[in-house]
Image 1: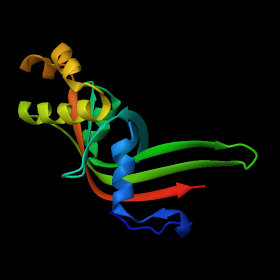
Image 2 (image 1 turned 120 degrees about the horizontal axis):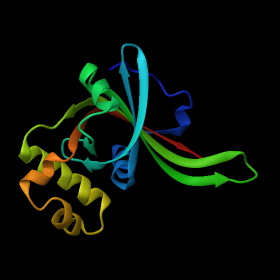
Image 3 (image 1 turned 60 degrees about the vertical axis):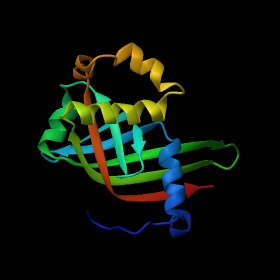
Length: 160
């Protein structure tokens, strides 16, 4: 991945624990994909697995994002912690993380179960309620595709 310097270095978050905290607390990521020199952005809810530093997403089996991923697995994702607009200052308080990596479709049933488990644990107060209602049987995992973004580089930034 190409390396760039942050324009306003005083806003850079260098502490990996803070970057991790933003990923743990976030609920959605905007993912940038590219195919044939055409960019595409999509925002999805996610689950974060800190061990391998991976984001998991669930989505439809078919669609534009799947076509882009098949053509080019390189991806960039942004997670933003919105701390609110600062009235009278024409400024916004925020923390954000930009992740560069590769995104892929999860194929095996066991990997899909794991990925959906990460997603549900990240997003739901009681993941078992959703699992019992929507993912009780193995065949239920075939209804949605599960994607995994392996983070190769993450940078953080904070404003105000």
